[in-house]
Amino acid sequence: MHIDTSRPVMVSGATGYVAGWLVRRLLEEGFTVHAAVRDPDDPVKLKYLNEIAAKAPGKIRYFRADLMHPGSYQEAIAGCQVVFHTASPFILNVTDAQSELIEPALSGTRNVLETVNRTPSVTRVVLTSSCAAIYGDNADLDDTPGGIITEAIWNTTSSLEHQPYSYSKTLAEREAWKIAAAQDRWDLITINPSLVIGPGINPNGTSESFNIIRRMGDGTAKAGLPDMGLGVVDVRDVAEAHLRAAFTAEANGRYITSGHNSSLLEMAAALLDRYGKTHPIPRRTLPKWLVWLAGPVADKSVTRKMVRLNVNRPWRADNSRSRNELGMHYRSLQESMNDFFQQYVETTHARR
Image 1 (cartoon, rainbow, N blue to C red):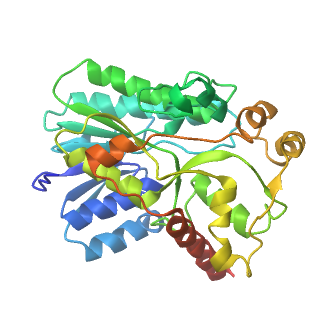
Image 2: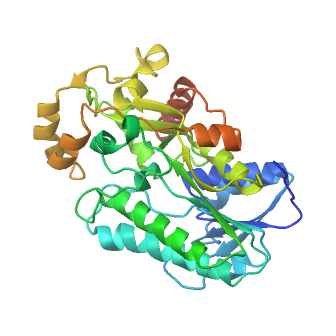
């Protein structure tokens, strides 16, 4: 991996969960980071990045940019060699999927990449996509070779009505490849993480992952969890994958960035040794019929179709491209979950 820090790099959505760790890694390497944020004058939002920048060899410069405003990334991208486009909403509880998920994901991608087309200094774009752009439900694995998802597969089962978050990630990534294919100056690489977990640079993060850890600690899920397979990856590893994708000359295409073929129950079990006596960590498996019956009542983002296609089904992905081509080594599930839960405990304690 050859890293040239002489020219700046741009990170969109710089205060985000993955972006926070990515900015930290870039500053540690000595880059000047152009951090695109909604409000560069918000001291609360920028506090955590400023604390990191104060101790790191690199420099941070803030730029005002909005996913929904064409051209608003122009200043942030000017003079940059690499653009990291990480900004995209990860929320499951939406009232209007089109305006809350699809439009920001699509417009943001177009916005950033059209600006890249107008900026001659950019040679590579690293886009944060998702495994959600590869599969929609665990049942999709029935149709994959060997019941495993690989980078060659695209999500064809999600829609505006069913799994709209996954649908938004699929549309945004397809759009990115379309724009990239229409030119030959810069190349596109996508990082496709599974469920991202681990401590945030900002302990009060809004990513869906923080809700999952909260439910495991505050008693919401003490009756048990559905047996649902999912991929899990540490946020610090996802940030590292972005850095390596940007500066490994041969890197190309899509990279499944997932540390473990796991499940909600395995995630909870990883906490039992350290926190099982002090917190109501879920230990039991909820039967599928109960999840089917009560799930949609407890959480409106859970539908019966979703329960049918995901509960009591495993999840398996092949992460060998990220390991072989980017040299990724993934943290253990124990380390990620315990670091994440420790942050939850400290943050909850600090609020009291």
